[in-house]
Length: 135
Figure 1 (cartoon, rainbow, N blue to C red):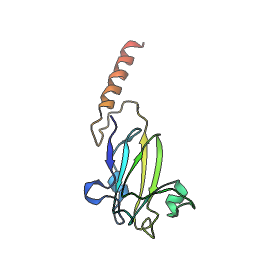
Figure 2: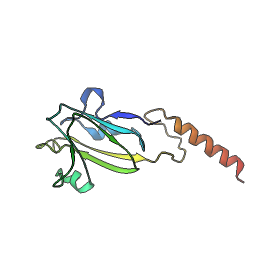
Figure 3: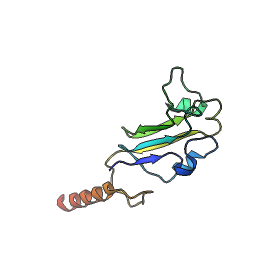
């Protein structure tokens, strides 16, 4: 069950001056989810970048910027992902996002998630069955 996740929440959306590190803290991003970046079209954009571009707030030449104002980015693989706004100095004003995307099926953990995920219950059930069946 994939989720659409509004970056910055419904109040802030995608704009400078928001602490996206704080916003993402404690959230769980899973392969199959979609990040939705909502902003006034023409005022901002969304660029997927690597760690170096993220740290320096400099989009690579020829980077493909999403510009619709309601951009959905599918999380198709696990691992660390970086996003930024390439307009003026927006990135240096905080309009950038770093997340860690978890695989679709993960090892059962006793920690709680920021959202209820039926996959976690399924994973726990399978783990318990395997522990019972395997000596």
